[in-house]
Image 1 (cartoon, rainbow, N blue to C red):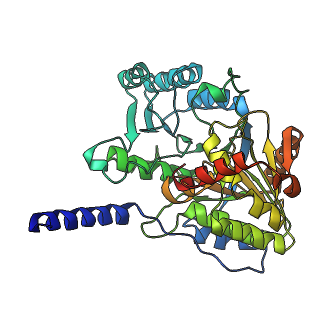
Image 2 (cartoon, rainbow, N blue to C red):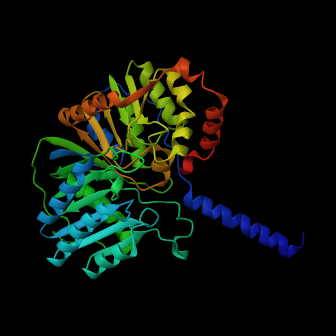
Image 3 (cartoon, helix red, strand yellow):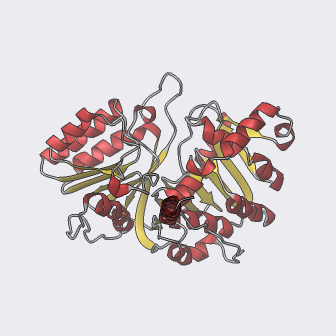
Length: 418
């Protein structure tokens, strides 16, 4: 090699190393088996995930298509600010409904700020963007393709947040597409759950919105229209996990793993893209060994919008079934809710999938809710959905043919990027 070729090779290697350092993530490693139950560990759980446990909140669960009327009504009642952050936004009826509500709010003098992930909002439509901007809505994309985002294109904003007047907030899995609004040709209407919060926890959710807004819009909020004083309005304790520090595991991943470690009786997970890594599998294994009843619900290959993820996740079914985890595949449509419950006492709800992309790459949010009532509603939803599931049994699973096994292995090779 010539001197020039050597210099170019070394420069390329250095550039690749720098990009890797910029985008790499730290794994969450948690080996402890704490003695206390989750109710006795709420402050520690919040603190370990860069949050603060806040009392005095009220929580309402909003399911399936009821999300859109609830959101439109809430936007219509807002008096000062509307802050919306979402991943997926596509043209259609749902888009028109939400756009109409945002335009109307802006025209009556509210500060309306909207942030959409650049990739997830690529089918938002030029007309929708023009309507919003013409009405005075501040609209920004998160991580659009540009030289300034070199090395960060793969980091997506997967959160779904709506904050109104800094006093009320929605957090969950619903996206702004017609698949969540009404039945489609291939699937029935997607099933999902979003929680509406009032009380002091709304300030933490607003802070999560403000974090990405500051990056995308270069703006910070220093007004009481955005961060008003928040009085108690209920009796529920809650905390937010959303921080993803450099060179440290994301708080959402840590929250999932520590909550599982604290379980003493039951773990119920409903997630559309269930693809735990070796540490997640080990955490579930230890839970089963403690006598915890662990049950997972996720879509089957005929009811998912991503067969790649489903087959990648099926690759580790054998391990999970062998350690005593029960797996139920939902058969009707895409089961999109991202919720999990612990011991009938605590629930996590938010935007995060149970996979490496959500835990280690995307920007996500999960709200921890210490409420037997809310947890009971989610556990009952799990039971109701079992009627539409097929439980995977270990013996029959091991008798499947070579073709699905091959698909599972091939899809699993790139599981971190799904």
